[in-house]
Image 1 (tube, rainbow, N blue to C red):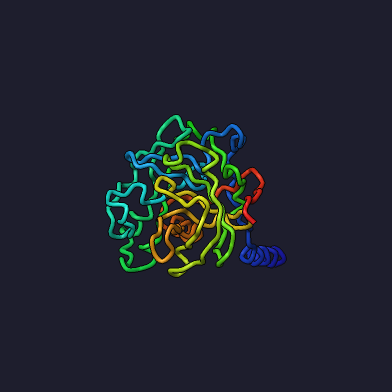
Image 2 (image 1 turned 90 degrees about the horizontal axis):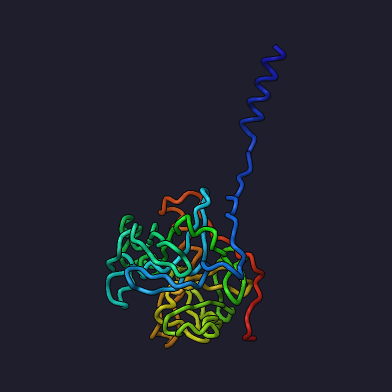
Length: 274
């Protein structure tokens, strides 16, 4: 009888025992000052040049770098609706500056949204512009997730309010490789379209080739990815996709186990503007 009571108590305790979930163990990163692959490097998808935003990893310790989904687009620069624009398929090779072997486009929000039959008129279709390149394992030892010049990200941000400082690092070929022109900082004009997009003004503005580059909020958290150069309603501003929403959509639809943002190894230093 005593043994049966003890067994019953053990079963009850086990039924209510909650085992805390642990986060993925981060890969071992290369030192920031020698890493050749990091946020801000150029990517080339079938010849189209963009700028990588942040580094990501998964439960298997595979490493990814993010870019804009439209970097694999097949239409005109004005084709920005991911549910109607044509795009290269997942599996397309992508050249990454600093890597010895091409990476692979393993997730595109533009592909996923079509597969999910998202409403073409929705804010999701208009502003979800995010893709992941899986790096070749031979290049994992060359990666550091820190943003050049600014440091961070300290983690994933949420949103921006009007007047919030924002920081970015562009690497368009139009900057002719002049690294002093790569750091960009400015201010948010606020969030719109159900939280999917932020309008920002930066010095200097994002230009073609900066597409996909990451944005940090005032605390150094990763908050967005450069998607468009705007003409209206704010000329010379940029449209920045909300990374929190983009990453959540990717986690749900990419099939990548335990996908998460990699925090920078370098402290966030902030910028120069008041």
